[in-house]
Image 1 (cartoon, one colour):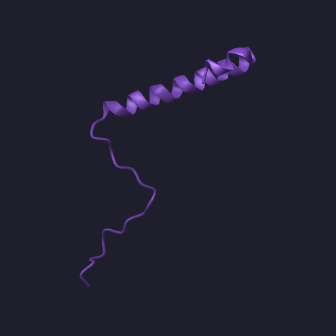
Image 2 (tube, rainbow, N blue to C red):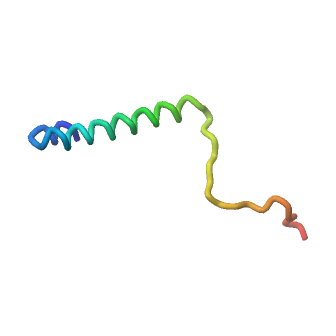
Image 3 (cartoon, helix red, strand yellow):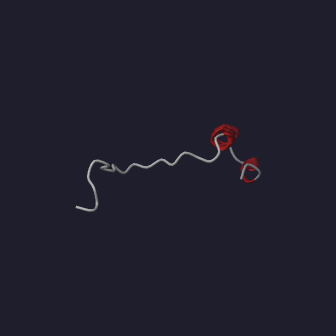
Length: 52
C-alpha cells in the first residue's frame, strides 16, 4: 500500500506509514499473550441457574 502512495503527497504517505506501524506494533503486543484473552462486550449474568 505504501508503494502505491509513492507518487502522492509525502505528508499523507507519512500518516499512513505511522498508522501501519501502529497496527503492526499492536498485533505484536497481542501475540505476546498466548492464548489470547477472550474479550466481549456482552454482559453475562452468572448469578442465575439455567436449570430453573
